[in-house]
Length: 220
Image 1 (tube, helix red, strand yellow):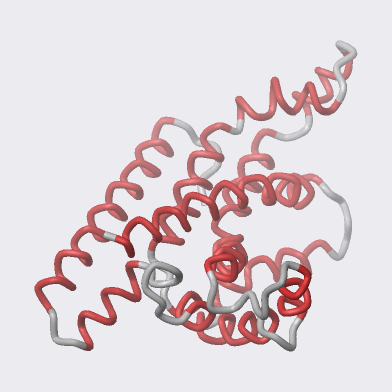
Image 2 (spheres, one colour):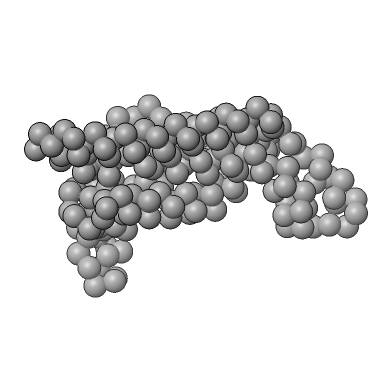
């Protein structure tokens, strides 16, 4: 139960932060004419093709005592951000970033700039136009982005194992708990947790595709 609650806490916080971070990034990628923006797109998409252990290794170095994460931790009176929930959260945000950015980018591209241009003719500023026009139109994209980000975080293994290890109550998420149970030949317990994740993942994907069939905006 501790591993399950920790996993949902990690997925919820990661998704919330990702939605905030990904919105301006996706808007820039969807509408910017910057010629080198493909480099930013490639960097964001790296977790899609990079082995999780490779990403986890470099994050471990960055968050360790000798990296910038260790310097930040020293400001808080700590020693390292690795092997902590904060480190897990940072790793999850980076690892799941493309799963949130890409649906939002696609959604913003399909909406285009014309709704904002119409709002400008009515003396609305960018903030008002984005809040009252773009966000409602992009609702399907946000649903897809949030669901994919949450589901992807639930299934993380390699990155969280490298950054957080296996500390019960602190960094032991459900995927690592399943691995631990399999190593201990506790197949019945591993089956229960695996079936639970399978069911949750299926429900989330069904929700995404059902939403996509009703709205043609914001699919990955």
